[in-house]
Image (tube, rainbow, N blue to C red; front, side):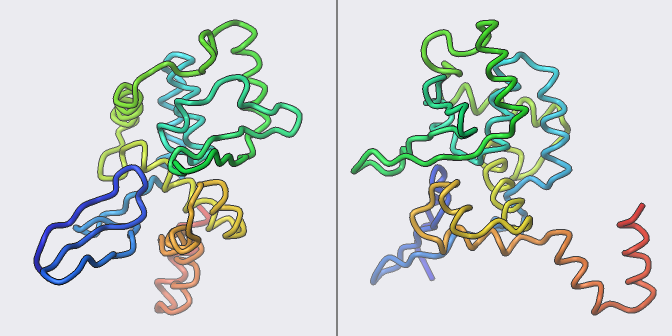
Length: 226
């Protein structure tokens, strides 16, 4: 098939390929053209947040927020105190990709984060001008990637979108119902959400170990338990 290929970087849902007759839409994949994954693993996310703790409150809170909500950078930058429902423990995010109407979605936040946000707000470390993070999208991108570098994380996944994908993968592999993951991530089509199930995780390795030779299976279990 001839023609160009255009990545939808913000939405991350489809690739558009043009040929001489018509446009063909190819489902977005968890892997790039070289077969490299686009999501952070659990260990990488932990390392990323560990490195972020050494940064300012603004940077750390932003990195933490992206990791536990899976939201887009542009959505995170629109969040302020009025978006946090402390009673229910949710953040209310406006789906910026839904341009035709004002569509909102609620995402649960860890109690630890809610407590820290209240503490930071009391100390006036967040939310001075109605927003928690008064940065441009590019500035936010650079701050996140700088933390990735300090955490020694490199590859196609070492970007803010890698945190979003990592959240989706963790949710699916943790048994969160697909419709909830779809709502949390703000996907219009559940087929997009289902793609996260294609990521290879610990559970898949356990299943694969049953098909390996006995010696290999024993070694796998021993390493996993260590």
